[in-house]
Length: 218
Picture 1 (tube, rainbow, N blue to C red):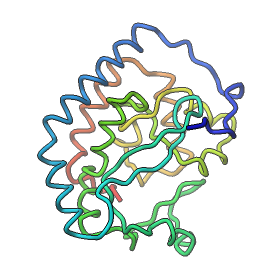
Picture 2 (picture 1 turned 180 degrees about the vertical axis):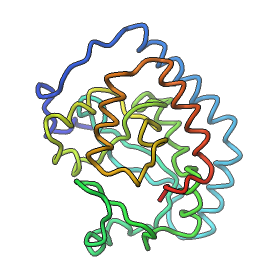
Picture 3 (picture 1 turned 90 degrees about the vertical axis):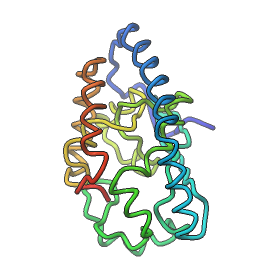
Picture 4 (picture 1 turned 60 degrees about the horizontal axis):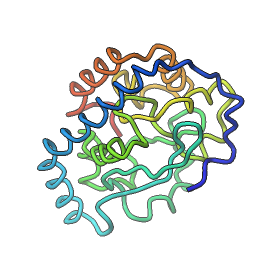
């Protein structure tokens, strides 16, 4: 899979990462993802059965996202929308409630009944534990964007591509869809510049409090 061609690494502010932090972070990621997969396997099994019974189509939704240094990877989620959701995107663009290149609307008609529940509880994100296990995502880091979104990034915003994307970060625990695009990017850059293992562990802990029943999840 090729790197994202419109990403220019020379434009991104470089950070001097501490090797000890990166090694520790990878250990935490691997162990956390492995334990999470084992502990949450009953939840994932129930979700898989519910998705299959609720609507036609695959259980897992995979999509190309732009990761660290512009490297494109395939991110996994439980499918929460109808199978032809992307085909209906254009007709819904006028209802977009997010600023910038992001697309989010309340009561998206493409979301299935089961999909609404697994989004509300963030269960749809659980397959990304396999992304973490593989190594193209981290437990904590900026949420990965689509290529069509990255192409509209300013040079400053491209700093978020300087680290491995994650399942959770400031955005996940500070309002999610109530935060506009510009603030979301600034929170990502804030994390990148402040990151350390204690911050990572704190964000993981805070994520548990919003995992079930986040009123801002869509």
